[in-house]
Length: 412
Ligand SMILES: *Cc1c(COP(=O)(O)O)cnc(C)c1O
Image (tube, rainbow, N blue to C red; front, side, top):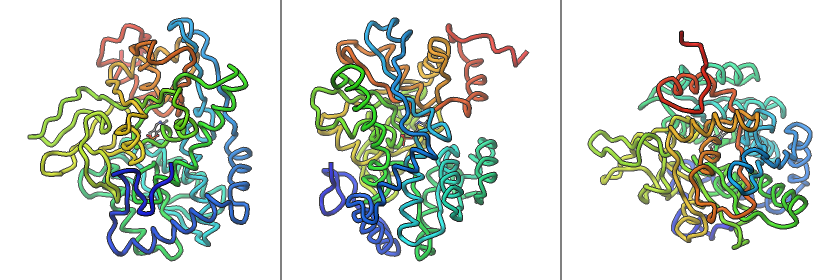
């Protein structure tokens, strides 16, 4: 869906930014319309060619034989884990870096939480010969060393953010501030379908290649559309990327799987939501330039979110997804930490694919879904691979009694 003239999806979205950023988002909106929507100067052709040659697109749509046997319906995995960098994030990072080039800007700033988006942006910037600075919470820098090394190896500068809790929320604030003062030669590559208009629509358009390919591949493979598409949702970029091509097909159920964390209950006193399920449990508010569903207390303070998977650990969600949920087009559901870890081990053992912990939420949903809700042909977006998560999976598995988990033998 397009936004209205105010950059809104129904009641959500918009441009809630300080005046210093208004010129920047308007300039970006103009470039988005010309290059992305109207393919001026062949922008989209170059984008698609680079996604193919540098990114490795199209990614396969694979029939998951053993999962299908287990559930009695056909499971197809959209293998974004095979995209360069190991996750869907390159689609967006490459699109935005290339757009910056077309806008005559040669410097990139980006925020990152776990480091996945920073890594994808550093790769895209190196590929296009651009300068890249990544803002990352100090706490996250210490938790995600390998991604910090990857960014530096690709020539990016990693700047620690020390305000607040030193995590993603503060990193986004800091990057927006930095962007406001350097907008002349700098583009801010935001990491999901969040932020002020045009970011949510633009990031969706760069990610929508996932669903476009899956739709074509499903038509070739099963001679028609799938009955349902399942994707995990943090900010919601792999989600909107997988859903967008199917939104107008009422026969296709769209299911967004959020991180249920350790519980769906909120501890207002402590300012903590032990989950990241903003679609399922959030309240309407404004964060990072957009009106959307948020984890917040009754005074509007953002709650500290939680998920075993750092890529889903965010208090907000994309405004278009919030609107699609209100319209009843997208069904939100949540899978907790324990179930996600079980899904991680299940896919590794049954299919020989180690998923990202984020993607493991979508896999885990299959186990407890009502098969009638899913239908005969189910596409699951496997948003990324799990190499980055091995250490935390070993640690988190040890803490729990997960029947299907193997003996790792590393803590003896
Ligand atoms: C970052 C990430 C996510 C969550 O981001 P969305 O914007 O919600 O897609 C999901 N899966 C993987 C593999 C990620 O790296």
